[in-house]
Length: 516
Image 1 (cartoon, helix red, strand yellow):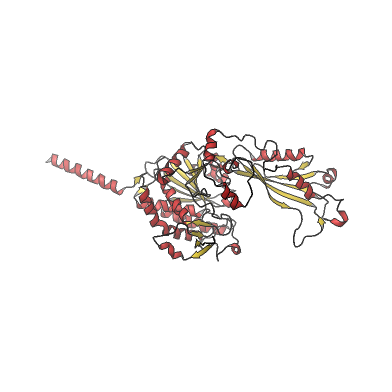
Image 2: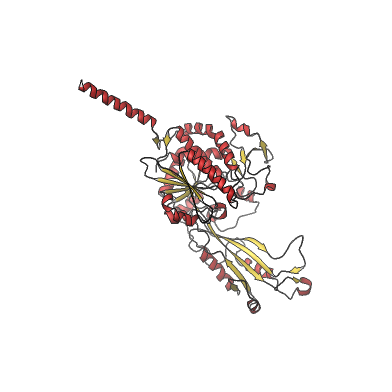
């Protein structure tokens, strides 16, 4: 009898274990590509509705009250998915953080997004309200016409349709993509094979001024093994894209001087120096006709090994299409191709001012001329050093370079005088090795789930605030862009292609089911 009871207890224990296993979450189980596509299709309308609701909250970082409303929405959205959320106070606007840990998971991935957006000028948008999402279809004349939002309820959503509103692509769309992927995973009774942390920057569009100090303050709370940045556009082909670096930036301005006030050109033309010509001469010495910077040492340290050359050559850029879109006859000759040109620091004039033009202009000689410059940095360059090279270059031209507005004595003592206001170190660039553990992991997940190799971008032209994470947390980072290249980010009529929303959810789902 005891033997029978023992056998019965064993059987009951087995049944109980099976029951528990069937009701518990599975970790890191791959969802077959065909099944994931079906699951994503079912989530498209809920995803679009959630994005529409999120985007409806204005998010200019200059309006703190609106950012607070976005934080409330974000807290509710992540809490609904079982995340522990927190508002991390900084010297500026706060950071939002969310965390979800899973039993037995030992690795952690931190996802970075930003919830703020560029300011809007409603009169420049082709819709009534830039924060009210509308659905549009491209016509034969390549313009976009509004169509009924309810068409999205159909089983046959056209991936070429687009939704228009501020932050649909930069960067609320990617946030919703992650949220929807988490929903799909939960509905399949699955969990990620790693712990998930999320940080939402509230002032990325303003340069993230409080981020560096906040990371130092909340270092333990944000620590992770890998950092994935979900911001920026995919390659123009809309193929899955992995970006391993981005350029940084610094700036400076140059001011040249004429008479202390504007002078009548009839009375003083040929007598009082025109500062505009002085400034133009300085600018003309900085680049050759092919666009290469002529400042000594500007390109020092830039070199490519065979693997880097191979990676850049493999990017399927259509240079003819790029030139056509830019409407330029030919590109500058800094690099052998578009990708190679992104590996060098660049120097550009971002603004010029001397006197009034058009209505309000007059026959005068301006009292001063001002030019503002931007330098895009790469990992081999440092902002303060680049500004110093510029200063030395101008001094070689015979100019006295001041770090302040000149006094009367200085103006009268120096024929060639310029005030250089330097931006200092600026924001540094970063580049993660393509053949690194995080690179191998992400290439694997993309290739397995999309059945094609991703486009590998060694370093992109734009900037995102990744370096503070790398420096403070000691975490390797890769950018996983998911929105369409022609999304008009920062501009009127920002949009998100429906097909990119679908691909973005699939990308997030792929990452969330791939063990590290």
